[in-house]
Figure 1 (cartoon, rainbow, N blue to C red):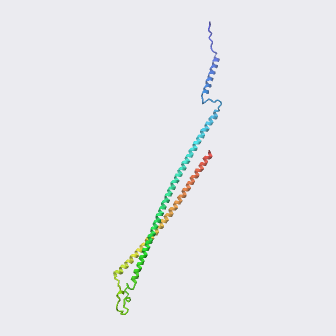
Figure 2: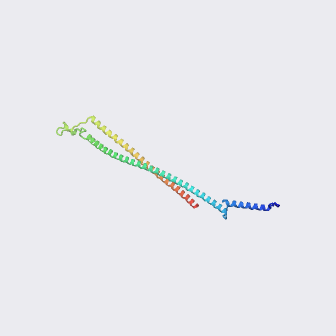
Figure 3: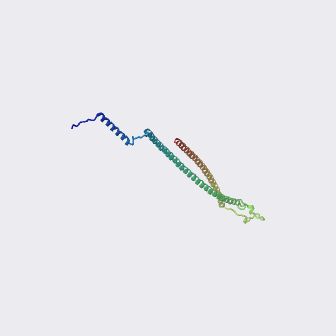
Length: 238
């Protein structure tokens, strides 16, 4: 029995191969999740992905801007607090200095009262001594010591002669008192000048503190206004 060698038709073989390749390509697209579309608009999906990435980047940028503004505001508040603390410390020191000066003034006033009292006593004593010195008894007025019946006689109890040493001692006391009075006058003058200087210094310090406080408040208002403007811009851009 004869065997017939049937060669495949080249056209048919090519068609079969083409169908086989098409099936492989179809299966490749079907099983590849990146290229399988099944009715989905790939361009729209890509656009949505890009929009999401842009939105995330914008949100991150806003968060970074908020963080930076928050840090700046916190730094400004900390600086304000530090400056206010420094200002309060300066005020406290000024108050302590004023209280110390007030106590010093009170002590000086008390000392001045005591000095005036001592001076009045010294002046009273000096006046008494002066009266005694200028009295008829101590000036050895001979008319006072004359006997009313016998003028040539002297009454012993009206005659009290002063020695030169006693007169010199009295003059020395008077001179010392004059020097003390002049020294006290100079001390009072110096104390008054010192108090005037202290008052001027305190007034100048108070003016400087007020100026610093005004500058700090103005700086804080400027920083807060800038922060509010920036925050409004960020909220408007959302």
